[in-house]
Length: 336
Image (cartoon, rainbow, N blue to C red; front, side):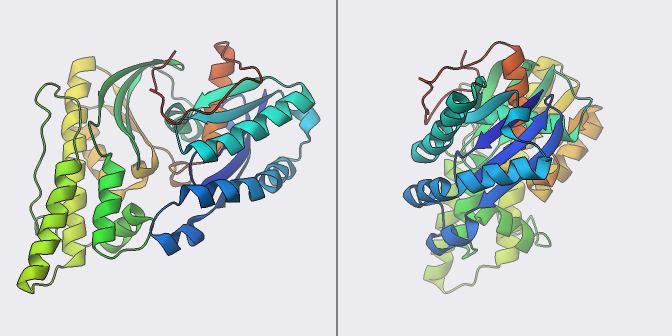
């Protein structure tokens, strides 16, 4: 089954063609990063306009790269939630137009589910059940994946996401957008014990996360240093911050592994590309004798191939939409 998948939840316009949920025939991404660097982050209005300008050409290239035409497709999958509403609307409406003109079924795909499904592309033998840690700029979730479309949320962030905290710390250090990625590159050799950051607790749920306090601590450390005329060591500060965030992620994940008894851990989301997180999760899983699956770096960020992977299983479960499908800015991963 050949599925043409569309991703436009933030600032990357992606179109891919995926066969049977596991084989990527093409995967095209038009990145807006060079433009958003000028503003230090994604400007939603600009992102939406760029999606409008590029989505048709990106779609045609995906077809050309796969050596296929619209007649060779079996369905259209699209990210409809969550994300920037204007950006999502571009992808959803383009997908509905394709569905209407070709008569192909339209498959709505949740963005976080597709991040989990990116592992199906990198690990063809992976099957549920497993525990998933989803870490991105907007989300931090611990999810028990019972089946391809059956999710139980064990924990989630109460405030800022881990990726958002890293991006903010990077911006405070004067590192360019995307902050988390550039902090990982710049601070890989820094001393992770040079600066101390708090390890926030959520009293009524051992599995929920909170990163707003760490972000505030980073702001205060830098402001205090400026007031005293002291110089912040960028490499050490970044390394310390990343290791503090990862320490929390590892602690909560280990608790969830004990609770669920799952023998496979899956990393997903843009922050799954972080070198510190990957290294520490490898150590954790080796210690607990748990299998670890991580997406290839090319599938960590937003892309349409992961949408095609999850779209296949959504289709098999009967999740097909009509032309009334609308974009949704915020939607839980376990939404039925």
